[in-house]
Amino acid sequence: MTIIAAFSKSAVYDGVMKLFCMLFAASLSMAAAGLSDVKTVYLLPMSSGLDQHLAVSLTTGNVLQVVTDPNKADAIFTDTIGASFEDRLNELFASSKPADAKSDTYSRPTMQPLSRGKGDIFLVDRKSHVVVWSMYATPKSADSSDMNRLASKIAAQVQKDRKGK
Image (cartoon, rainbow, N blue to C red; front, side, top):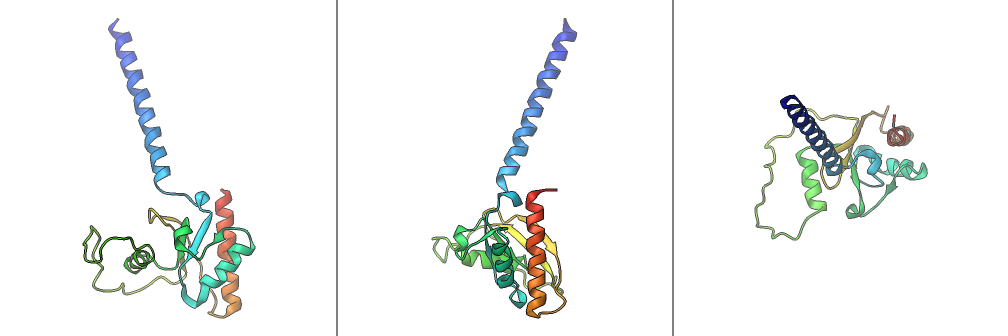
């Protein structure tokens, strides 16, 4: 009789743990949107006007809808992340808090990084600030035709990754 009781307690425990793991995984997936959840994007200014070329490539290829109001965006395209990116987001999404109220925010580093990545592109979830997609690609030059080719390459990769592996 004790063997059956021990077995049933173990089975119940395993069932509860499986349920807990499934609920935890579901909550994680709901907390941060994935690339397939992104429908509208806002583009922050990028070096060499890449944001303008990327807007054209994303819309003409029906990859994503580009919005001019950051509040209507699911995600934000940027070529830099870090303290300056967070400051920019705070400016874009300034709340109605009094200006002199201090919140639980980080303090900006006193020094910029010694080197900055060139060619990095990030798609950041607007609400959670989680990077949902990224890519490294550099143009041959800042020439408009090279920036157009790079934007087309980025849009094609986003479209491919949205469809899945």
